[in-house]
Length: 320
Image (cartoon, rainbow, N blue to C red; front, top):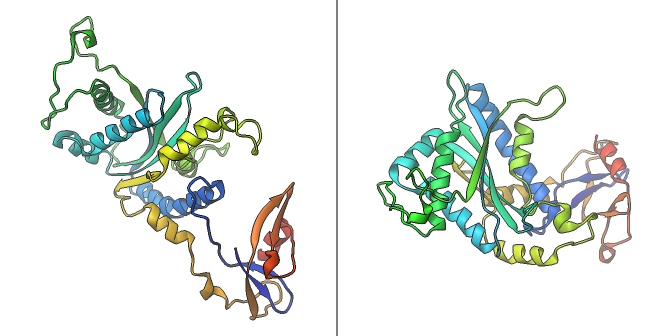
C-alpha cells in the first residue's frame, strides 16, 4: 500500500495500493469485486428508476471430468446462445439488452466432479409487470447443450438435424439429452427488512471467485487444501481464460478497465491535509498489509526502515 505519514503527528493516511494481479489471489479478487460494485450499482439504480428490471440468470451443464470438457461445453453453448442464428440472437438482445457474466467452478455436491457454471446479472426492460421468460431461455439452452452433446449441427436458419432413434421420446418428439439447466429470478431493487436480497447482494453473488471456497476443496481452514489435484487442474485449465464478461448496455465495463481502477496514480496524492492535526506536509512510503493471528498489521518492509505496526482499528479511527 501507499501511505502518507504526517510529518507533524505521524498519523498514517492510506493513499492507494498495488496488487499482485493474480486472478487466484482472494484479496485481489475482493478488490476487483469492489471496483465492479462501484461501476455497476449506479447503472442498475438508474435502470430501476426508469421502470426496468434486473434478474439473476444462471447457466449450468452436467458435471464432468476432466474440467476442460464441461467447461468447453459451457463456453461454446453460451457463445451460440448469444451469437447464434439471427432469430435467437435478436430475441436474446431484445429480452436481455445488457448483462454481466461471471464463471464459477466448484465440485458437484453429489458427483464430486468439476461443476462449471455461469452467474449472470441481466437487464430487462420494464412494462406493466415482470416477465420471467423461463420457457424460451430454458428451451434454447437445452437444445443447444443437447445438440452439442451429440455433436449434431445447428443450421444457420435455426433448424436442427433429426436426431438418432435412441434420442427420441416415446411420443416421437426429439430428446436433446438435456445436459444442463438454467435458473432465473427477479432481483429486488432494495434489500428486505431483514437486510437480505437487493441489487447489492445480487452483484456480489454474481461476481464470486472462480473457485467457490468450500470445504470440499479447501477443508475446514484457510491453510488446508483438501483436493489439491482439483485445484491444480482448475488453475491450469482456467489460465488465460476470461473470468467475467459483459454485453450490450454494460459492454464498456471489462477486466481491463477494472484493473486500471485498481491502479490509482498514488504519486499525485502526496499533497494532503492531515485529518488529525491539519498539517499539510507528509512523507510517502510503501507499507505491507498483513494478518498475524487475530491482529491486522501495517508493516514497513525491513529493507526500507524500522518496522512500525498499528492495529487496523486504530488506522480506521484515524481516517475517520
